[in-house]
Length: 484
Image (cartoon, rainbow, N blue to C red; front, side, top):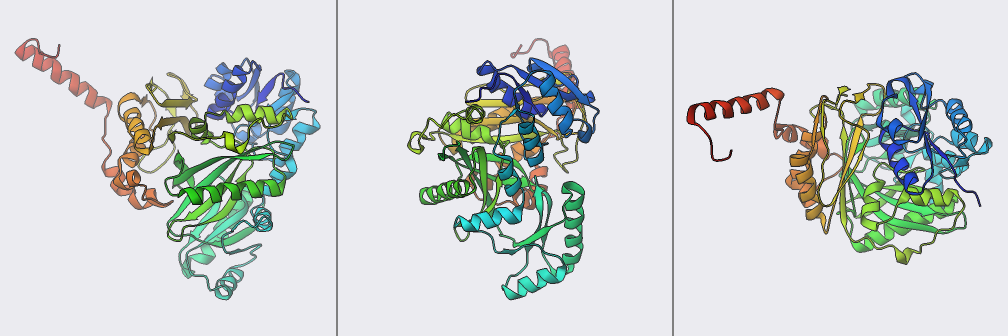
């Protein structure tokens, strides 16, 4: 049985810090890797040691497989954890890690490769008797799409997807015949540019769909467990922004069905480690369809940890050491509701990236709050990487309780100055009547953006100066005040 003695975290920012916290609990020394602009980043300080691996462009640093593996070998690490993003779902990197004699903390490379292909993963789902969205594979031309729509009696809208795509890239919704040629060419071009593979598939677009994913853990001895589901419906540009667990969309019967369906497909593909099965839920018909398998730790895993009391990173490390799962399905009892928002360095009105120096930082505290951060006061936010600054999670006895705590955190406890953040948008969403009632779809932000922006409370440094000046003037004119 392998034992992890020292581990390199092949990532930066929030995911790197998250993995390091569990490693610290287990007394496993960690090694960080960093690019030149990240030399003073938070994850570099949290690790026991750090190795410089290149310049700012990811291809020269965080995507440079040889440099990362060499860094692990030079620092006497015997394992690598990829976090999420960058190389986390790269089968070639996983193989290189194993070929170097290191422990790969993740699923088998062949499974990563299989699930990284949307067409092949859909075939696996069909074999496992898992419902899939009506669609057609290996589309070579616009005429292929038109023929499929005619033969299968499919109406617009449809979704064109890059087979190798992920993270919201390489997909486009087509609403009419006029858009078909342009968007088909656009998806193929983006797929080739991002994934070096322009194979595309087309699926019926589910109107008012909800995005539900099931957290899975599995060992090498055939034991597969689910840790229940998360709702990740609130998205912008096909990327998640608010998640919650459990899902407010499901009945108990549907919850049981969707969770055991996820277990079935993971058993079919021979999965081990932690992973996630994603579904699109048609709330109008109460039907769910397989989307994909994420062969890594998910950004939003923390809310599952909050409702179950389990540490998923800890489980990943155990599973990488070839230990059997010491839990049964009947041992897992979610007993709280949890909510997560992603605080990105972006303009909340148009989502354009914001970068610079964090001039002021106040971290939320109080009951029911969990923060995963990658920033500190005075740190630089570089323009080269993902804009995630912080994951803010709240938990409560029920959904209303978790939302109330999140409102307190976002409106009273949190201050981030020096860059623009999504804070005003996040607060507007959780206060919206449709969000509170659970009446939303993946198009919620798109459909309500103007309304959400209209509720923003602008608070500039000038406002603070005017407030102070007003108090000074009042005291000068009227003497000491009651509140003094």
